[in-house]
Image 1 (cartoon, helix red, strand yellow):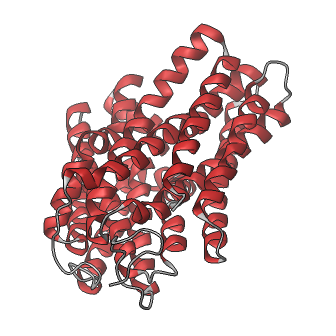
Image 2: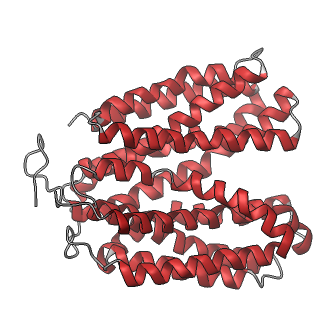
Length: 395
């Protein structure tokens, strides 16, 4: 085991070779879980028509996975610490498979919601165990870059869901589309069970952190909560904004939003490349301040459509960059690498909480003050979150 320079006595795990094959499999497991996160939204109109759902009920079907994560992230981290991240990942994928398969037979809202809550439990196990596994499987030099790329799994998964879900739903119905997702998830569960050990060499056994050791990861997760609340709300509400403020047709606004959301992936990949070349995490965190003026560019009254799109694109790019900093920086906040599963549980819980709270908060502000009313919220919130990240990453 090696000691991280500049932080006396903190254990950072193996500095050996990076197992890119298993890291790739782990990343794909996160992507397929994120495909499940977006699969109901893709087929929403067909599901609503067949099951007779209200808009509110459909919203719960879409967001149930995040609700589970917001409620149980830390307990999931503690459970994974006992099970081992490899077995927890395989188990999480299996739970998603079973719950997703049961959901294909849903005949009403209650059955659909029950299956989505089951998928949420599996999704939580996946998103907490994956970064813990990557932390264990990556050598010290490659770890920040590998974790920063991991941060792109949600936009990649949702983009893949949008790309494939529409045609498959049209071809086989929403139940057939859900069955395809369940089948692919099952295949990955089997591969993970066969190819990834319960515990990688860097974490040979359970080691629960002391409560004091979770203070810095909790501060990191708090920054992540604010970042998720602000940046993801912009992306989620962008079609509405484009339609109401700039009179963009629904199909066009959806396409523009998809393109802008993919800039989050570009931000995460760029951060990984920068980290691999030796750029400091603190420098990358500070560069995320581009989101502060971008809020004015996107939402100021009188700005044209292309100006608004440019500002929204910068916010999306900054989101990908800052999410990469959070995941890549988590090991630097831990006392020992063996605490990565618990630390990731805290990050998942608060990040999901921000994702849930953001759209309703933005909606209330827009209802009272119009779209320009979100500018000070984004500016102040992002400045505070990035300041906290910069302090945590100074080591």
